Image 1 (tube, helix red, strand yellow):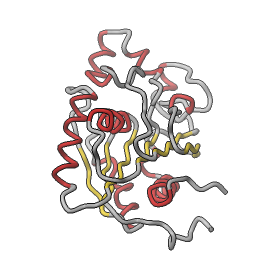
Image 2 (cartoon, one colour):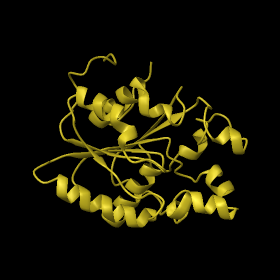
Image 3 (cartoon, one colour):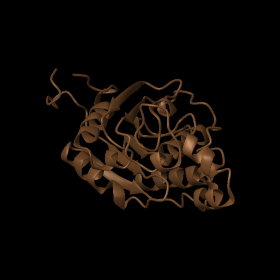
Length: 220
């Protein structure tokens, strides 16, 4: 099967997007547009990433899925950065969800070195807010593999990380590839994109769409 052959991809169901830290969801419009072109219906979940902790936002996400998932048989989730952690926490606290797959984009599943650095100072803790509480510092509950989960990591090191610390190579400028790995994940792929650039990448859209339909990423 070639990558452009979408005939075998099951693109039914709803795709819910979950944004990252300091974002609102407007930043994911290109991903939503691209997923719609692949035949999916889409919804954006927005949450107070700084004011509420990951666990509180997981409660909000569950309520959002209950509301917008009425009459929907399959619900997929795509989370960018911190959004992937909110998704993980939601499945830990509310495992009885409708069928579907998960894709995370640049999510620091094992903790963020930059978050640890910011957390050492009062201004840094203020900037991160409650996102570090069982979240960005890597102290989340382990993933139980309740859904197929695909992880996309970036390798183009353009981002805030270069201004604050030397991240391990390869990295996407904010999150190191090694930080994105998660025991129990279904598949993992590295793409030549930066952390924020993932939100405007056609290749990310294609790979995410394929994983949601097939449960794996596509290699050349």
